[in-house]
Amino acid sequence: MSDIRKSLVLHGGLIALLLLLGFVLPAYHHGNLARVMVLAVYAMGYNVLFGYTGLLSLGHAMFFAAGMYGMGLTIQHLGFSAEAALLSGVVAAFLLSTVVGLLALRTTGVAFMIVTLMFAQTGYLVVLYFGEWTRGDEGFVIQKASRVIAGIDVSDPANRYLTALALFAVCLWIILKLVQAPFGKVLIAIRENEDRARMLGYDIFRHKLVAVIVSGTISGTAGAFYGLLFGYAGASFATVQYSIFPLLWVLLGGAGTVTGPLVGALFMFYLIDITSGLTSAYMLFAGVALVLLTLFARQGLVGEIRRRFAPWLP
Amino acid sequence: MAALGSTAPNNLLTTQGLSRNFGGLQAVSNVNFDLPEGQVRALIGPNGAGKTTFVGMLCGRISASAGRVAFLGEDVTLLPAHKRISRGMAYTFQITSIFGRLSLRENVALAVRRRLAGHPDQVQGEVESALSRVGLLDRADQIADDLSYGHQRLLEIAMGLGQKPRLLILDEPTQGLADSEIADFKNLIRSMAGQTTILLIEHNMDVVMEMADFITVLNFGEILAEGSPEQIHANADVQAAYLGTG
Image (cartoon, rainbow over all chains, first blue to last red):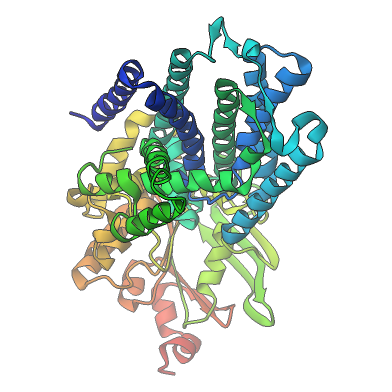
């Protein structure tokens, strides 16, 4: 079987499995998985930049929040329909990532991390500053009546699950195409050896900028859907904590793997879900998991599978 | 290709007054250099003579403090490296620089793909042809880091070949190669002679004397002498400065 076929079977199978789970899971896990799929899309966007291009951003919450507020504020204050609001969330993330990319990519390495972190902090403060519209930390609920996409009420759990799955499937497909295309291979080349890639004639800045825009826009799309599907937008999604989450999920699942973000988000979600039932010091378990990972599976769960058994995994 | 402008009709590459200083150190000063199309040119000189800095300015890795570089008759002094490369230069690094975690096939494919952006179906064939010319085709699916140092040098040359450049700049390509690999390398250069212009920085005098059509000697950042291998071999200044037998 060719690598492309294997990849098709694996990822098609994953989507089919998630679809099946949507009909058989008990309500609690059904709701969790819908949430995890949208968060996985956030992490998949992050992974384009971190896992494939090798640029570590500490500010992706600003893109997630740009999508969420681009969607939420236009519904709340401008009376947009859900479709138009989602589009405006995506556009907001696209514009923000373009501007941030143009400015932040003037730096590299640690400076890039700091600059993205600072931009994201600015974003958070802007949300608080305009509290009259954003309701700051308290946030605002998106009314049930507004949460209808193309006649489908996404506040209904079954519809919400299927919408989250559709979003996940589309993003999975986009990222698969991206990393298998020559463009994605240049991103990997930049990650591996930027100087060599430049001396093969590739325009490094342009490739990195497109990577930031694709990454920020996908993360923002996740933010827009998250707000709409779960009916809430709040400043906590713009905090530094939400910039760290996708980094953790991607590290756990496997940086530079297509399915790693889902695996990482799912693993972390349930690790915290289960351990928080046992102790209030549940973050200790997350810490131990990360230490174990660093010791025994440095490339993340899917990364380790790729290294040992399946080098063809995209 | 663009018409040749002010430079002499056969010169692929010309520099005028090319200089570079690092702080107070004049690494390269006022170098006027002409490289005719199709020539195999060796650039030699003692350590620290400014050879790598000079070729760095040719391909855009290092910006010039003063002077101009013209390639294919056009001034490229202000162009960034990737634009010069896409006009037909290729550069292999003195310190091996490959994509260590990728396969040999992908290493060379990255070199080939930019040129063949519209023809993905031809990439595979050209990759295999470049790998087979350096004798690494049977290792195409290995990870580059797993190769011996000598083979990594050859992979780097294959990446240069994959770009099908008009000008191939090789920065100490035979460093770390075994004698048999050097013999293969010489054959490779012979097979390219006439089609590709080659600028070779090299310490191995056997390779230089055997392969070069013409030699430029740099010393303290300046051109000390230029001439055929025989002339350079007989040049007293060169012997004094470089060969240490003066």
